[in-house]
Structures are given as structure tokens and as C-alpha cells.
Length: 140
Image (cartoon, rainbow, N blue to C red):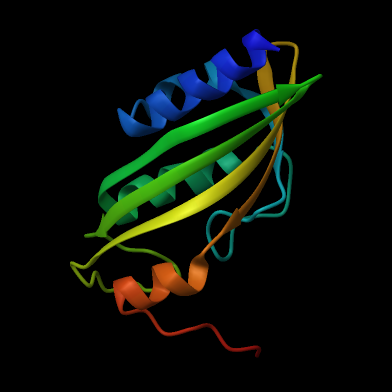
């Protein structure tokens, strides 16, 4: 269990340090992100790599700080606080607002063979959108 927590903790550190080239050390090549980090992200194994890159490009200041990690078997649950400032292009809001956000999130990881194989997350997206000044998406 500790090794799964270590992988997740190290992954968050790589995200926070913007070490995109190191993501392959923590994410399986065919990682499946059930959360859809970015609107329009391809629905295929491994698409999370590009989703995380786009997120980092959109938010000049971006951190995901684990407040709690709980592991059972190959599952690691992380309660985190995510913060960021919208300074770059984002598919949901192409023009940067320059505004910041801080929201709590719950991430559920499946760790297999020392790498993150699946990601699920629950986030306060309404709070994030309100803080950033983004319009709420409508069904279309």
C-alpha cells in the first residue's frame, strides 16, 4: 500500500513542478482517465498525458496538494486542494481570465505494476468556474 501512495505522491510532485517529461514514470502508457481532465480530451487510453499537459499550459500557477492519502489494495484515494491562475488557452475558456481558483477534490487512483493505471475524480467544478469567471457549459 505504501508504494501506491508513494507513486501518487510523486506524481503530484511532478505535476506541481511541471515535470511533464517525468509523467511516464508515474502514469502507465495506457492510463485511463475517467474524469476527462480537459473538455474535448480524446476518449482513449493514454489521453491523460495530453490532458495534464493542457491543464498546465492553461494555468500558469497550478498546484495539486495532497491533504490525505488512503490506500487499500491497488487503490489510492487522495483528498487534495487544487489551485491555479488562468493565464493560457483552455478548451473550456480560450481567453485567459487572469483569475485564480482554489477547490477541494477527491481523486481515486488504481496503481498497477508501480504506475497509475486508472484515474477517477470528483471536483467542485461549479466553484472553480465561478472563481475563474467561466460560463457554465450548456448541453448542445
